[in-house]
Image (tube, rainbow, N blue to C red; front, top):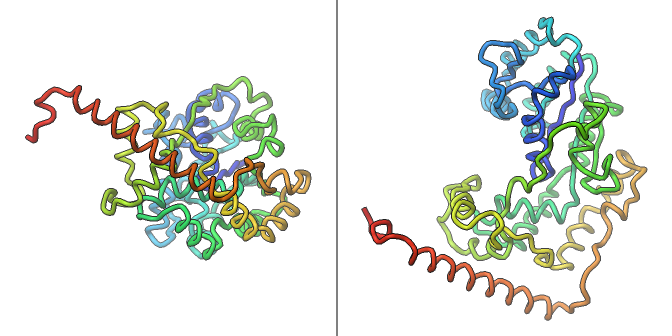
Length: 345
């Protein structure tokens, strides 16, 4: 049996990959590529959910049960005994498979996977750390009341993200030759694109598959996140996406509240983040993708010729502009509502 393991890394294209493998589950099965459902059931098994998500929840339960892998072993044993998929390639994608990786719980899960498969390929995508931290803050950090500067400083103290340690841990578990680390840069990806690169590990011609290339895992505008960070108690926890979902339904995902802001991050902050990770990134590039020039992946960004004072002024103006637009549109929305909808029950 062959396993393509995509342990993912949050904010590194995992949602796009998972949407694509679910969308293409029937076509992949025609090519003897099997995407199990959330309970690790296979096509043809009782209860199999053909539209089910990837098995993050299954692995989360194992981790919360102290690493008891009995259920995982039982599922993999049934895979081994299945005559329908004996020569298949199995695809497991779950971001939480990097959780507890340096401890007995995570290692125990991966030891079981390594034991049951004759051939394992691990594909691990990463993105430059300044990009990653901005995206992670837009997803989680601002909900804790932290500005991007505060969140970034905390991440630097913890040396987060730990790409090199994760890549090397997978090398120890599955063998270094079994691990592919790919930065999310066009020059490092087959066909210059994430989904083409991923599915090239599974089928000869990925172009025959159906990809939804719309923006996935939508983030709020970073200037808006800075504003929201000042409101304590607005979110139940860092995973509370109710506000984002309501805004998307009400205003549409094309609204400027969901706009990317190329100039949001202070270039000096970006340089500080990348300088902090430089030694790690050098080892990462040399060990896992020496064919891609270091500067292509981790080099300084091109920037506009603004001095620090001008950049601060520009950021303030953009934040004020966004606030005014949002307030105006929310007032217009309120005025358009029927009186019965405005009144408390």
